[in-house]
Structure formats: structure tokens, C-alpha cells
Length: 433
Ligand code: URA
Ligand code: CA
Image (cartoon, rainbow, N blue to C red; front, side):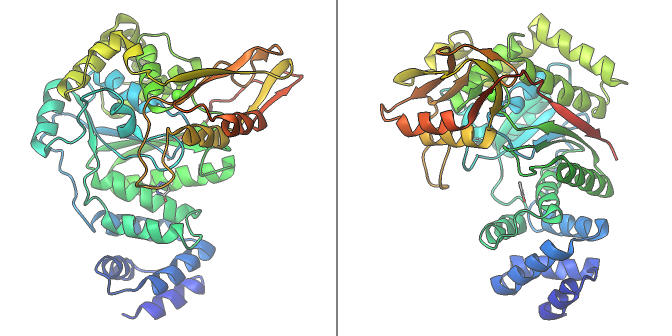
């Protein structure tokens, strides 16, 4: 097989076979196929698309390029949850203990965030002592005992995707549905879950800016998950405004604790019920979504979910006292309010720009090497649809520097106050096939 022939075939709109796709992924992983040929192929895929068969061959070839985690020694059906990205997305912090508290095993491998706010690992590390490096045996033992553990992604999970993603990033080929779908699903499949719940976000703060593309991505991922023998479903959620009120690592831990106490923001709580119910049903712990939701509501209101969070933090070496004394991790030196310049209703809170504002405060990374400041971030007091009076605080900025005028300007530019109230949409669709 010659790579140049395969590039030509894809360029002309033909499909590649399983053997051809395996040849490409193996060759790219072992460096026998150079970046320039791979770049040409990526651009051909960008323009010519791929069939479902091609996408599933690509996904499996990338999953098989590294270690496949074996979770079979954990009892029960392991359900993983993945979001295609958002701003202030605190759901995993709530969902992991919440669904574990009703008996669903959560063996979660998470990544660090690049850009915007930190990833799930960065958020958990806001809790002093919290360890995200456990041996495989410790990880399995903890999940068997307590039903939940969250660890850092192993270095050798889908290495082909890691290399390809870096190449896509510099060849303008990130925004391609077959490439995004195979990238995400290869890592989920390698991470060993039996079933997968996807949160595909749409709107300004998401990869997929419009609903049609989000639906296509969701349907593609659900189909390739099933072809790979994993029960898969997707919720399409809105990410035009940040989720919940907190954006920033410690702030989101506190928001998760509030939510687990039943006192969290309405949208975040609802998102957790919707995604959590799907996870409970896929895990076989409830027959219907209604039953699952009832179980989750009971766990939240009885305090069982918060107790599970406490157990999880303790198991992973974290300081559990922060759960009752959250001020211990809210250590930013300066807190300042952003007053509304006019009265009316909030009609826009542009998620990605607010994420950038949080990053500029130090809550996210500009490059992989940057350090994160866990204490800084933004707490929204108004969300889309809320009434606001001139002079009233729109949000609080938590900073460790007095130089925040750039951040304030960016925030003002991306919060629009209009005359008529708008009802925000949270869930656009649920895709099961
Ligand atoms: N997230 C991924 O892991 N891969 C993509 O291609 C896009 C988002
Ligand atoms: Ca949040």
C-alpha cells in the first residue's frame, strides 16, 4: 500500500477500507508516514467526509494504537460520561458522586483543560491533598469499595489521536465531524467503559456552533459507539451561556458542593439530573428515566450524594474539611463586582468570551506548560433571562492581581442587556440512535 494512492482516493471522494485505515494509523503512529502526507489526507477528509464504516474503522484503529483499559474486575456496568466542551462545566464534579450514590460504578479518567477554565482534574486538585494519580489496582479497589474514583488519563491512551490532534490543530482540520467523532470515541473506548453518555454542546462556547452540526456529531458518535459494542447515547445541550454560576476551579468545587446539597444553580442541577438519569438507566439500575430521576432526587435531598462526595475526597487523600468550610479554598486576594451599566434583561452572556476572561485571571491555561491559579475565576449573579437594575452587580471577579481592567472590558463587551426577557434553552435534543 502507498499512502499517496490513499490520499488520492480520498481526495476524489472514495471510501477507504478497514485495512487501508489501519495501515494509515499504524504508519502514522510509528512515524513511517510523515506529517505532510497525513496533513494532505486530513484535508481530504475535511472536504470529502467519511462514511459511518470509515469512521468506526478509524476510531477502533486509534483506540488500538495504545493501551485498552480493562475494567472487567469492577463489578457492574461501568458508564462513562463525556462532554464535548463548555465553559464553567461543573457537571462531572456533581455527577460522579451523585450516580455513584445510587450504585452506578464510576471509574472515570479525566484530562486537564487547555484554554478556558481548567479540566476536571484541575478542579478536583483545588481540594488540598486530592490525589489524581492512583495505581490501576488502587483505582479498581476504590471503585469496588466506594463506587467512584477519578484519575488522570494514562499517558498511553490512544496515542494516535494525541499525535493526530496536534497535527489537526496546526493544519486547520479540527472542525471536521468525522475527525472529532473518532477522536473522542477512540479515547472513550480505550478507557474501558461498557456504556457512554455524551453531552454534545452547541452554541458560542462549544465546538459545534449550530444545532444541525451538533446533531450530526451526536448521531455519528452514537452510531460508532454502538458499532464498537458500547451502549451509547447523547444529550444535546446549550452552551451559549456558561453552565451554572461559577467559572474557575475552586469556585466550581464550591458550586458542586452546593449542588450536592440541593442548593445549586437551576440549570446545572437540571443538567445533572438529565445526564445522570441516562447513566442510571444504561447501568441497569432503573427501568425508566422517570424512575432514575426519582432515585437521583432522593439521593440529593437525603444528603446521600454529598456523603458520597465526602467519601470520594477522603479515599483520594483530599482534605474533607473544605466541604463544610468552603471558604478555605476561596482564597483569591481581591473580589470585585461588575455593576450593570443599564437596566433591563440579560439577553446574552457569550460563553467562550467569559471563559477567556476567566482564563486571563489565571483559571485556565494559554499553553500546556502554564500553571493554573485554582482560586481565581468568576461568579455570575445574573444569567440569560434575568432582570437587572442599573448599578446592580452582574458578577463577582475573584482575582490575585489588581490589574483587571482588561478582564472587565471583555466581560462588558460580552454581556448584553436588552428590553425583553428571553427564556434560555438547556436541552435541545436527546439522541439514542
Ligand atoms: N475533543 C477531542 O477529544 N477531540 C476533538 O477532535 C475535539 C474535541
Ligand atoms: Ca459552573
